[in-house]
Length: 110
Image 1 (cartoon, rainbow, N blue to C red):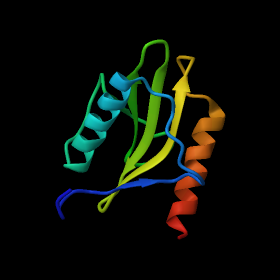
Image 2 (image 1 turned 30 degrees about the vertical axis):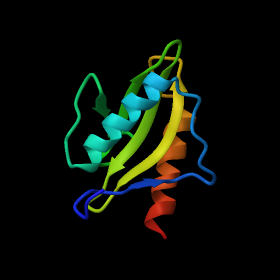
Image 3 (image 1 turned 180 degrees about the vertical axis):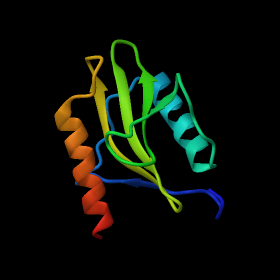
Image 4 (image 1 turned 90 degrees about the vertical axis):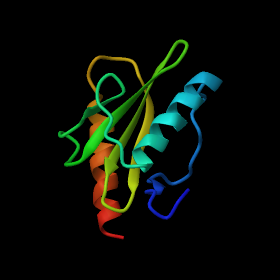
């Protein structure tokens, strides 16, 4: 990682990697690396999530039987990972949205 790269900041009490398949793990790493280098991702890989907050997005990782989502915010100095979950419905569950909003508030108060 060069000094110009944005670090990944994981906002979670204990970081546990989801049970990605090897292919999904590579795709997630590849897309997160692009974000660190300052690239803007668009559909089908990412979509804006303004309901969570400004500069918030949802990264889409298709796995064998699961579709993973990585909710993140692009800050000037970091890529802030708010949550990782497996999405089972067309809409993001309200509790996930609220969890991400609360993590942003907590992060801003540090």
